[in-house]
Length: 333
Image (tube, rainbow, N blue to C red; front, side, top):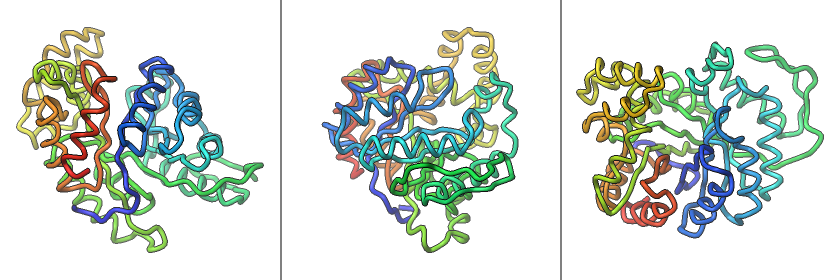
């Protein structure tokens, strides 16, 4: 592995595009299949992540739970720290604080410019930890807090920072307990680990080892073509938002990616999905039969401590949970 790990993670992402009842069913199935951590996607235009996490906490007994990931723009960071602390109490100590800069295009719908994302994430992590220790906080930076505190005590939460760009990866290595690296291909995972190593030089010893988890788009089915077809929607969004250096790393056509983005912006979703190339599927998803997915996991785990299996999971997400768990086990994850 590229970086020694602290917390063990066998993770799954549950998306709030699904009704909460279905999401809870998937979470219960994931716990039964051997997953130990569930991250719930957090976007204003889907169902509320923390409401879904509360339901998951009541329906599970051992599964660690967290937003995957929240951001400090939609919700004031002090209120966000309190939401995570409430989940820690409701789950009897199973909460994880997933935090990142948020999706630029989604936040733009709210009139949010996402200014100073590195500072915003770093300050949110620092203030949250102080609040969880029972301190009262005065802060004036990317957000303001005046004599803020929580009126209840909770055990400290592990902090996972969602990261993709070089500076956020280095920040995660310096301040977080774990990092959720947005990568589905070993080439991207290897590059990300190089950035994390740079950040580790300034990591306080008191934080212990960093857990490196790759958050990959996963689609599995016995029918390889059906699995790859189900991966087209998320890959379209990933390809459209991928920086040119990432596209070049995989020999992908930036003009094609731009056309996909234009289709998505115009609401022509099927045209966007149809424009996804086979190379894009290979670069931005782990998709195929259980054997193919296990091989993809094994290659990712050469660079990371863990894999978090993310959307779409497969043409039938409920049927995909057990095969993905077996594929992770086969890969040594």
